[in-house]
Image (cartoon, rainbow, N blue to C red; front, side, top):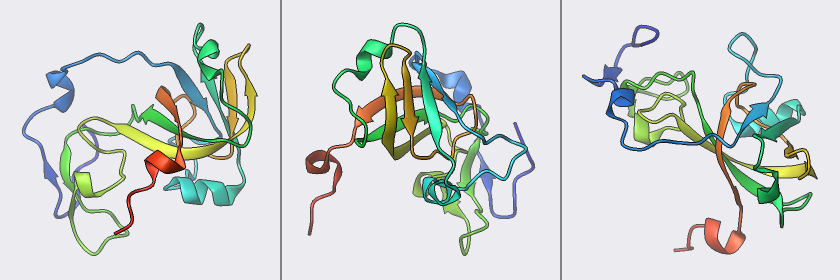
Length: 160
């Protein structure tokens, strides 16, 4: 299903994609300068450092769903990391001091390759179904599963 595992990594004994319990409707795709053969940033913070903006192009019929969003507003973009392998349950990331469980990482290599980023809207065209965003670490063409407004009163964890 992909590259040979690194030392310390463990594979699932099954293909998670073969255990589909639901279906998805991709609402659009990311447009970015990144791809498998580029020096893609490892996370959204690094993507912002590049200064490379990106866009979300919605599929036909979804533009009306942008009503109520505005330039400058933060949104959560949920994507389907379609090129990530799905069978690693323990990973050995290069930045860590040892192997970690997939659910302790933000890696695109996971049973369900869902990723999320909080970004800021830089432009919006509901008629065309296009949203400009400040950055992305997703490859060009990555499917978009959903967009949600980021709300400080909801999305910040409680203080202890």
